[in-house]
Length: 393
Image (cartoon, rainbow, N blue to C red):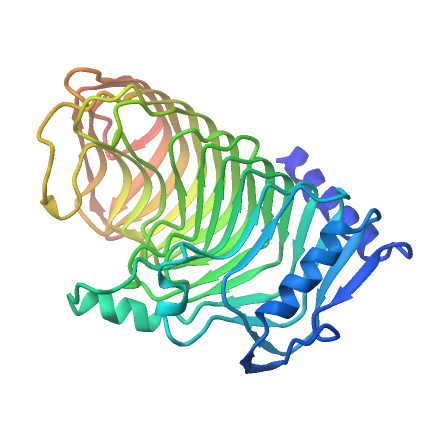
């Protein structure tokens, strides 16, 4: 914990130093033609600011003053000529009200192939309600939707103090990156907004998520294949589907998830707490070395879950055996209340049982007073300290 507090302090110092660097070239989107009325398309002005900042041979700042700016899809691509670009947002970016404009674009803001970029402050309002309504109506022509902020194939990126509201799909996604830090994020969407994961990480290493508040309609944090050396600390989740690894095993050849630490988290009224989920089909994927530590659950439907028969809606289920190997997962100092009788559920693969599961000082009751229960299938491990419900390992 001390190391990550130092990391937060070092990040703040870095941001301050970039912001106060006299020699930094500053590109103000308003000066370049952006209109702060929330109606005029300012996409070209934002792209002009990025193009100039990326071409600068000295540190550069893309500055977004206070106000509302309507922008379409923004593609901030590298490599750039300098390794210190700050995107400082004092205002709000608003997506076009017509969800078809972004709906098939996959990403609203995309940082691709960049290094040393710092994104500070601001609000992203994707106005996703219209698309959610389209999807819930059963119409067939609804677009998939865009991720609000995507960072791909990039290194040494910081996202500090960003708010994301009503995303069409994921709020923040990190894919194919090294050393990305997300600090002080604030994510907001209704509990029934579909596929609005708060922060999604896959195929990345050295990602840190600190001191963030996430209220959304899907996983607060979702961890996909190929995520390694991931540190999550100080996250408040709810509503939402909890912090989850997976789904895994959708493909036969899939990178594993390894060395994940989740500390000092709170869950309030969420569908899940800590969940690992995998499809029941052949796969060479794996999960190894996960620590879930110091969590408070309040009225969580499924506080602790490993589900290797994952099949949402029970539609087109593979009805095979999961090939994902799950090992060395530790739950330590987890306490609070379960909204259902079964507070701990390990439903593991018959072919590759979960092994090395450790439960230490887990104290979960059913609706405050009643005794909860635990359910284990094909799971092996050990328990110690306070164990409520009684361990089934």
